Image (cartoon, rainbow, N blue to C red):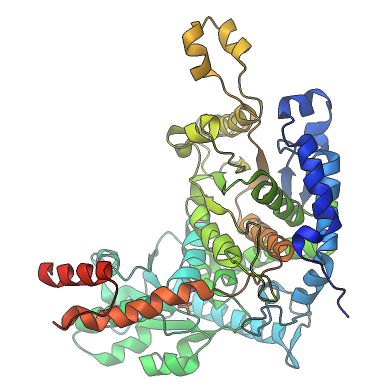
Length: 542
Ligand SMILES: O=P(O)(O)OC[C@H]1O[C@H](O)[C@H](O)[C@@H](O)[C@@H]1O
């Protein structure tokens, strides 16, 4: 039987952290570093080739010990075991949470409702590899006999952000003779601009939707189908050679008119935001090839194993999750900035926004009790160094504490002149400046006039974590993604929330469905006075 876990703020480690925070919350990183010359080497951890430097966080050994204790008192070990063994830990939807099964090796067995899901995973991977191989080699021909050169993924949320992030991240490894594009927004501009210079005879659409009922995706897919059929002389038979589907819903795929032979299945135990390693990654596999995709899975698997087996004090996702809790709940930090110093990770912050905030943006515990503590912080970010020339000012000298995750790679995929050393000098310098700042004495010593000194002082003591890896490969991306997935899991366990449902998305969808028919009629809309007025104005202006 699972032991009773007290409400978060009643756990002894939480209480100990509260009093510990009163003791050390104000201690400056300058002092912590001055008092311990080994700190920068000691407060680090590494696993699967990722190096995590968390020494520039406002923690001591005691803090980390108490946070680890909190993880234990929150039942994290049991919850990890429950997830990996296929227990239905997404309790509000009564579903298992098994993205880890998507990257399990063929020999593994994970049972859900009496069936080994790993066999099914590999059957779909084999089918994806076959399809990708035929597309990439040109063996798969379009309706007019021409090979496919353009792949357009149509999806939204988890059926878009993972694929687009992974494509951008791994572009270096992609087949450059092919074009990959991603349509997500219901705004007609998205699909129109995406298709404007494409030749339908050479274009394949992957309609990616777990439910195959998402309004945006279905509308975009319909528009794409019309464009294709029109472009190929009105022949509806063309659809079979130019549309593939990725879904859990075979019935809806067939209803849409896509040949289920071109359907790649996944399952209700894969959450949308955890699905990039499933068939949702089909566009990724076509771009980088099956071997590259297996590399991505291998990287994820290594991080999964590390998360499952490493003790919490050396467990990268656990450490990152605990630090997030420390800042969100004890320092009251409302956000976390994710700052990849790697151009290819351009869309990584956007990807993480869904992963973190859709997972942990919750207000009740598993038993439905309203929480009286903060849950997920807001995640945001941009690749370095661009951010340095815009919002970093606020991180350095603003009034809010913003913990930062810096992500960097030792080797550039595009070594040009001094670019990479300059990039790396910047990431190290930013973390250093945030932590140590510049004192009034130092500013004065530079000859700054007295009145200007306060403006030029940097308080420092602004925490950051640096993740360093050798090179951005499919494996490394897999490790990074799984690192954040499991950090999110850790946070969710401590906050005692369901990280795997997303009921909050529903209300807006329902209201939009109610408003849509009202936009075309002259009847009085039935909402509040602001919404009614906006609808009336829109009718007049459209
Ligand atoms: O893949 P689909 O079923 O089309 O869902 C796409 C997205 O839509 C929803 O509204 C959810 O909030 C997301 O978690 C999901 O990824």
